[in-house]
Length: 113
Length: 109
Image (cartoon, rainbow over all chains, first blue to last red; front, side):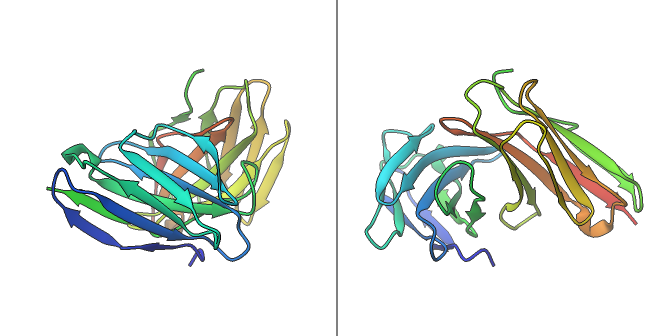
């Protein structure tokens, strides 16, 4: 158990809908990262937040947004969902930044029908 | 090198064999190199984070080295055991995080 929690575990929704994925980091960690793993693709970095502020941005679509709240939990919002958004979404946390160990949550499996 | 590349893509070894994998990454704008162990149906588990050229890290039978000037890292497993079977993933961090596609290791009892 990494100490990072993600909810829900599974999510099934329809095209055009909007969903919110939630992540709680390990106690003491200030950075949260979001990753996407699509079928037949490796892990893709989406975005990083540090202590409430966006720190780094990867290949995150404009339909996707994220935020980190004062209690350090983070939410990833996916809107106007398409079939291709079906993927496993991981959240990870670290103490501070890029040179710190990242601890991954169990992931949220999103299926868009 | 523009992307993070790992080789080989997959590897089958006998129990007790030692093995190693390679991770190649762009040497410009480099902050750190991360190694992860990823078992099927689980999430990636951090093995090492290395930042300095010449860094060597060790955890039990697994060790890693880093060459930032030429942009590569090696992961070594000594005396492979069936429980070492997993995908080994590396990631290079600069302004973003770039993951390789992993090396799938199968250790045959």
